Length: 368
Ligand code: NAD
Image 1 (spheres, rainbow, N blue to C red):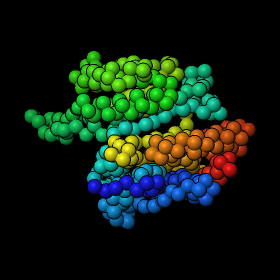
Image 2: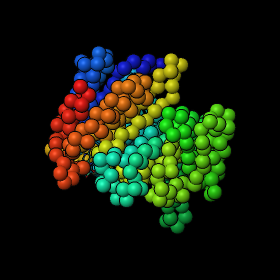
Image 3: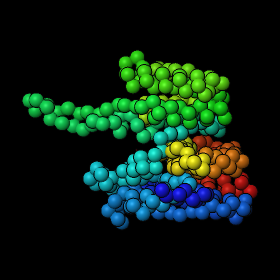
Image 4: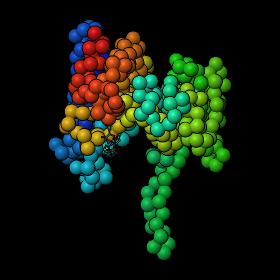
């Protein structure tokens, strides 16, 4: 059993803009170590296309073991057109799936927060999204993306059949629901559980297990059940009715992308993927921005580092219990936006355009 080293971060910048945005997190870690007497240890290595280019695999065993012994992995992004024709099992994205699966990161947390300063960037009316603060908890290691049997097989008369299996066990459902209830207690105390219990047996089990856990352990949290298609509709109609949404892998994939776009700002949204806690109360976790490697702007110094910086704030909060430091980092981001500084992706009239590293420096100066 590989032991988790306390306060050790593994940085995997990855491809495209990954190294640029993770570089800003590195500056913040150095600053915290120097000025707040924190003792974070960092290691940095290759994952994704850059690892494929050097080692012929998107993640080496050595890097994978480093991830196992780190308290948190901070990932930039992987992938890009350069690796489009690489065989499926060696694609950069396989590094991500391997880390999620082998570190048993079963709960994916994706906040959808509408920054007051950027309300106009949303495609929805300001009154619908202003003040929006939703947390989507997506089950990440089960359901239809992993279920067996799966595959494409020939059937009669030249026809083929594609098969994927959607299945969940009680414990898989209850452990992710527990994460959602615990989070809700620190927020507005409300969980909405989404499934398709009207047409899927696995959806019915989902609903029953969430209800059962609620009755046994979380009666003080408000719980609603909602069909996933209705949730998709409600997210556009009245998103502020939600606090924490918990749902399975497939519906979570869709609903979290939809929710993130309510805020109109891909470069601002963080995510966390959490595993189970060990006997010492430590858990493995990976933090990453929700955006990809943005090959169209890579190397230009214009990428927005805020999503990655806010992912690091989530690492401080969820992996290290450093709520105070997480809050001040989030506040520093707000302060910089209030000052009118913007990277190119979120620039608007009357605001000052800054580069990736100027944005990182401005956030650090607010931490002072
Ligand atoms: P993308 O998120 O990389 O880019 C979409 C658009 O948003 C682009 O115009 C890009 O310039 C812009 N953008 C994204 N992040 C930005 C930032 N921080 N600052 C400013 N602008 C930003 O999505 P895509 O173009 O569909 O995918 C590109 C590659 O990334 C693909 O190979 C894809 O597989 C990969 N990808 C990786 C991850 C991941 O590593 N978790 C997630 C999504 C996509």
